[in-house]
Image (cartoon, rainbow, N blue to C red; front, side, top):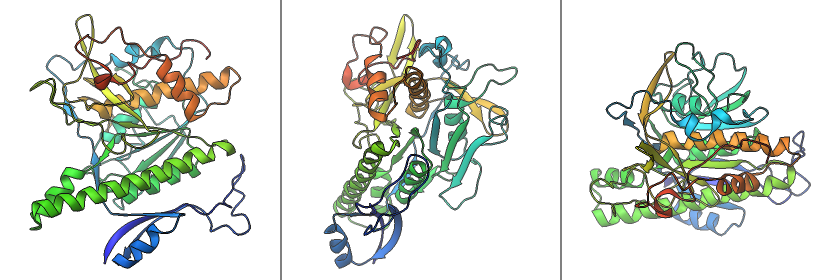
Length: 392
């Protein structure tokens, strides 16, 4: 028997009020749940026949590993101005942001004044951030100014943040950790969910081959695991959309990935992978500076939804310091922070913000004039994200 992650939707009777959980209605199968179970092949077929459940083999996940700062790029504070956050009338106040990553250094000066940070470990490796990646991403979204350094965060008015640790200190995890964290963030009424991580299909293939599996069988097995996990992810996204009627409609944002190699060949572009490839997820490509504008990063995966600063980005690092690194992992929190500003902007204008209308504002307010003619929508998506300057 193999281990499977199983998502159960909870039945059609599951309901929720806008204030407090009402519990299952009569005849409901209960709350949505994510479990890991050892299941025989026959059992998997039975689960697949259940319209209220999805099953997938456990799959390795990992952070989208960043790159070191480029030579001369250590200043790293350009992204805030580039997206217009320094000129925005909004700061993300009243918006709840979830960051699913390697955790956070709660004692960092950029976070110590934020009382509303809620953390939960899904890895079993303990609280805190033994890697740095999660702390860096969180800082870009809502970190406060640091004395002697300056501004760090896009949405400095965020006072409630959910930090789900889904990757350990080595940056590794499993798909069930991500799925459990997503449902946790939904239960905690997150408005925006940011994920700079990936489902590691190549790593799963390598691991099976190292265990002496034939290459074709290893590839086929990993591909089926990827497809099954994508179905589970899409099922959870459907659940998130269904909750819109109850005033819970989180916008999910994910990094596109760092596997492209345009420097070797402009055609060497890898498509965005899970979770960026899932339904209704806003995936993010990375952009860097150049004379007269910006360019899509050599490593940035294609077919993203939007693009944002992702090269030479300075943000918080465990131990109280800062670090300047590059990757679509750095671009993703820029969009999450800008989304928080748009969320607040819509609310300020008397509208009810949802994943759908905030995404519409993000897409309709992009810039394309700053990106060179050698790039197109395959490279940068709908365009370069911009913050709201006035009420939407």
